[in-house]
Amino acid sequence: MSRLRTSFGLLCVAASTWLGAAQAGLPGPLKRPALTLRDPSRASMLGLAQAGTRVVAVGERGTVLLSDDAGTSWRQAASVPVSATLTAVQFANDRTGWAVGHYGVVLKSEDGGEHWSRQLDGNAVAKLVLQDAEASGNAKAVAEAQRMVQEGSDKPLLVLQFQNERKGLVAGAFNLLLGTDDGGKSWHALSSRLDNPQAAHLYALHREGSELLLAGEQGLLLHSTDAGQHFARITTPYAGSFFGATIDASGAWLIAGLRGNVLRSTDSGKSWATLTNPVPVSVTSMLRDKQGVWLANQAGQLLTPNADASALKLASTTPSQQPASMLRLADGSLLIAGWNGITRVKP
Image (tube, rainbow, N blue to C red; front, side, top):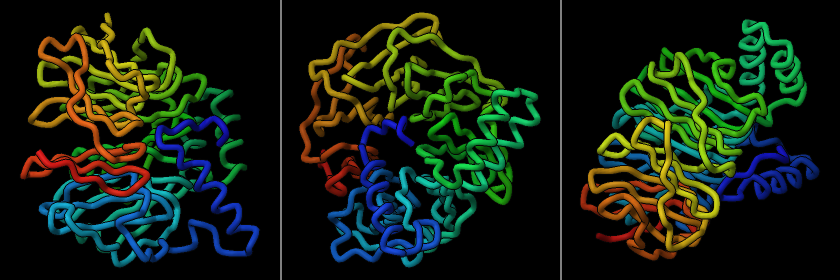
């Protein structure tokens, strides 16, 4: 747990909160449903997704917020079975979606985010990792997986990517990568496929057809051309953490992270160019939409590459604190999830 360095810093907040809860004899976050908030609009939020015309946001203490008016007003979901911090959310259609979070939580909703059921937790994740390690025959991986089982449920999941209602991937701390082919009825660990001997944390996952980019700490970048069956490690010129990865409209790769480092490759990672950044502040969220690529930094500033993609230019300054996720709405507005709730940026 001590090695986890998320861009939004909520891990320590959640840990201290639940340490206090444990000392007070309260149920842990896997056994306690999400807290009911007096003012949902002020909750710290980390993930955003579109479920048809509805917007779904997830955040600390199991908070799931729903908006049916394009982010103007928010209400809490009717039922969330855990109070673990939720870090990311995605919907495959207007009804079916998933959320992931701390304690290895994977939740599924089949009614547009109103009600959620638990598909995975950290205890189950650790057992799947052990099965994967034993199948690989790697003695070091088996020993590490056995330790994970002994440590219990503390297995943060940070990102997810679902191709459709059945096929999806979730990833997170300590080299965790798991997949499902049946909508989450069953899961299998894929960590043995990754060239990640230091078990660096995985912070960003992007899919473009059958191509996947998986980025994390210590300059880690992994690439798959066959939808995750195999991964190759790509050398990057920066050894710090990457919190965002995408492939732009031209096919170029972009990865971004600590201290405002943003790298671009037009040859599938064989060579890299560093984009000049007027604001050397850590990039904590990245979005690619029809308007281009957008990056949000810790200061709440929005940046986008210039015409020749050699540098970043400042597009806007927002009141968002520690942005963790962005979502473009149909009217052109941008929603940003952060420490101080959901910020709406008008076009």
